[in-house]
Image 1 (cartoon, rainbow over the protein chains, first blue to last red):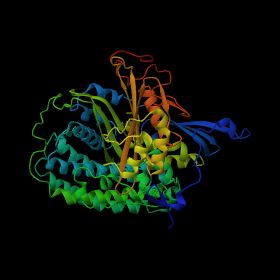
Image 2: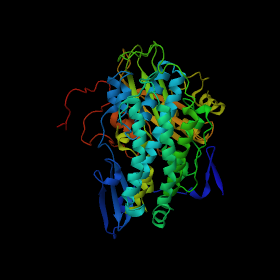
Image 3: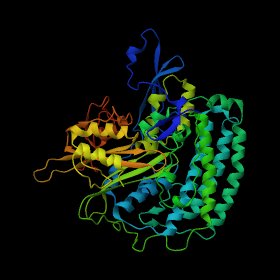
Image 4: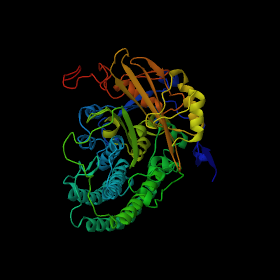
Length: 407
Length: 153
């Protein structure tokens, strides 16, 4: 297969297009004769995964222009971060990406540790990696199920796959409930380590759950191995890798378009430098390729957890100085400081940029760089020219979480 | 660690040997910004990670300041990310990077909406998170969080 070299990354040549759709297309210039209709998809549409509103200008069934409107879930998290202290913030950012809360906590905690120069003990680093991979598994399970719903009857009568994946995801949530006491909002990570140590026998139940889920994954593949599913996904929503790079889209969507990039392997954090990570890359660029990448990532997560779960070293889970007081973590320098740290969340690069005020326990500015925001910004470029029913599938295959987009 | 080719570009455009903190990057004058960004993209920095603005109060003779920082990344194995930032009096426009990275569009709109940073040459500088009739910019440091705001109900 022919490849092109774009900024040091080789991408499949056939996916690279000469031009993209114009997001600022003047609708009056389009075609005065045609009968254009403006159609609001959302904010209450079930396939918009929350409260995204997409205004579509359609010519018959074909989309001509697409304008996303955000802000229906804007809660002012970044403003709250300025008023709360470093120790309090992880419990607030839980609600950003409500499908993978552990990742949000990890991202802000790593930035605060970098800023305030806090050491994280060995045991905490390994536990962080394990829960991150379990969370990736749970998040992708939810995605497969809800994407099946988006496609209506294409997968086993619509709701079947959804019920199957939710049953498996529940097992992972039960593991987290044992660990933290909460099913969704864990408040588990804290700058310097974890709030809770592992409960007795947790490793054994993790291995049991992994064996169960691994046995179920081929079932999903059997369910999706049908002609209707292929017709809905193969060749639908092909995305240009150069466009993905320009818009800052990373994660499974970028890897499905042939961009071989994963922060876990390329800029390792926690203990990812100790494991030999296999990054799944597909060259199709369509919805089916994104499905394949996420299925492969689930298997990879199971393998990583198995590698690490038996070798969790003994010791404390927080640094020696950690106390559970709101003002316990401070930026102690006399000069202004800033830090950026990024992790690979199930949707792509999730980063936190923080500016620390000297001698204060709360940040001056805390910018969260969510991967879903960039995924939604793709829509004006890829939707024109697609059918309305395909737009539902494409939007589902991107897997944006609106709590994270609006913050 | 800053790669040599980037160091060379920075030295050529900013005219001094760089000993900068990698988090914020060097301070770039507005007139050099587009040239620096174009140079970085030519070096393979295809990926705009984020653009973040912050508001700082007036201090002595200094006026209120708006600081904007950009971070770009080279993808693939051995990924490298570098940053650069600008500081201008609050309300002054800085050149928009939309012509160079298409992704700067929504990034800069968000900073305009929340912090009040202005970008010159942006094709569509509208509010993105807040309602269109909202007054003020919520991430200004003196923006009160405990009083109702129009059109608060």
